[in-house]
Picture 1: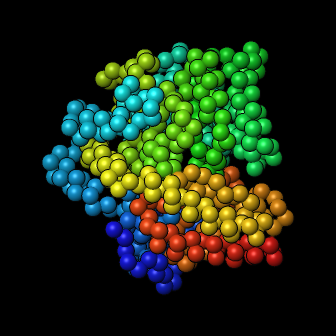
Picture 2: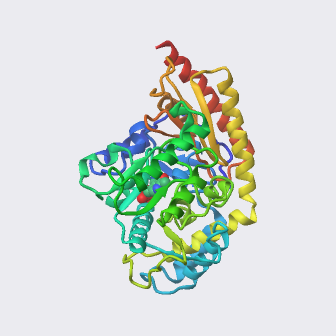
Picture 3: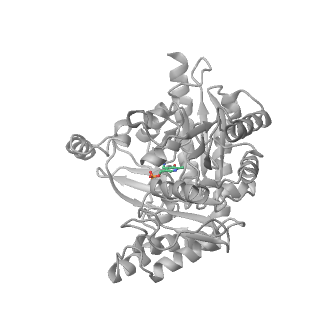
Length: 450
Ligand code: PMP
């Protein structure tokens, strides 16, 4: 499944990568984010390993932001992809076997409260599309206009999804967006300087206040949207009681609760859905990223059939589901089931966290390790103990030079985020962690002596 010799890095970036990036830089507005920090031009991938155009081989610890759960070019999935592509590729949203098969598969793995009681809508290829559909469904069901979202949230790049995203950097040039969005605090005990319980209580009080305060709150709420674990926000894993509390508030106020499982769902945390760790079921749930199996752009919005349901044509879009992507998605879910990758993700995730915690024992700059399954975050502080350092940036660069791909997250880029393919083996994980732990050691020493 994987390249044998990972990592093997000659010198990076190599000449071919440099040339490809140079030619692309001035004509492609979308290819800058990763190469800006890490100049790499990808050529091929196998399982949890990738190669660049210069032949350097890396262990991939970010998997296209949690897209390649079954690994790069998984042969079991690709078999179905080839078969489907040879047969039939596109039809807007007319019935196909591939479509029904995926919907039934999603129903089979849905959280308990939705399983057997849900409808699925395909709004478009991206996560942002799924969020837009979730927002529209919330409004359709309530006649409301306002939405409660959370600080630190990332929900996408289209106007509605940007409105519920909190980071100003993504949206300040594009206002006005949706008018009635209020962001409540997301419990983050480490940042809040509070106990887990206090952080949860504070967040829930604010949500309550937003919904109920007749003066400063939302006059006409349509719903609450929340990531069960915040991804871009820094793998922020809320303490027990938060999701349950939000569920209760949504029910009491008769507004739909939306869980955005785009980054944390589909097996990433060692459960099919991150919210299952808390045993809480939303009314509406978004999924994307890993849904397209081996990287096909595909997203879906699942919702409880007790809501006012959409019928055919109520939510338009040329790409309401990609037939080949759907086939890939179903096969990828099957692959995870057949290889018991949920249990593997739980076990291997603990190993990754243990290695990071061990490294943090003697290193005050590695302040907190968190996450669930193979969704792992490590938050760093600068040499003076301030939370806004650039350690994760430096770790990212060091790892790149040593054959391991990681991608930072967090408000200031100070969270190291690991979200490798679920097919990562223990051996590759050990090799990657050796490099990452070295990187932590080297880069924190560097920032401490600056
Ligand atoms: N929601 C969450 C939680 C995400 O992490 C992302 C992407 N990082 C999105 C929505 C948006 O997905 P896309 O980039 O596919 O539009």
